[in-house]
Image (cartoon, rainbow, N blue to C red):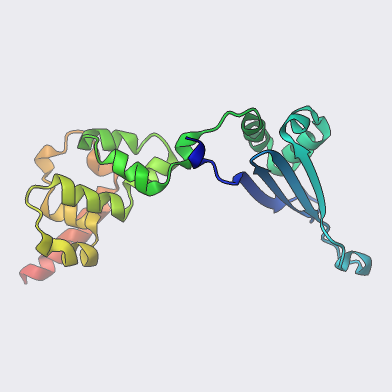
Length: 198
């Protein structure tokens, strides 16, 4: 699991709360936190002013109420809570697993389970709506798929390929169409099919 932790555990940038126009960059590295601050001002004396930088160890940051207040004021309470959790060694390893590995894991689930998984979080919804997800679904789970369909899948899109050639309405008993915006794809598919039949 340690290999999933990069040199930067977390970073975020943003402008300070109004009326300030100052810009901030907050980084949590392996063993320290850093807050870089740029003064944004039209005054000549501020034009070439270098950024300020605050550095703190994890243990010091957990005790530094002023720095915690600054982070909360600039980026919000949720970012502060998440930062404190990281500094306490509470890592969310699932967030750090690369997409290609998660897609590989998802490929071992049953089709209905994948559709439920898409409702868990924004990331899983994005993955389960990605072209790579539908490509794996078509290639691994559709018995009628053959390699000659590779170019068609790339041109037509793997999601539309699945719903056009491998999905039937009588198997849709779990709201699959609604979860994956199937209705719009179905209309597009019908239009394509109609054009082909003419």
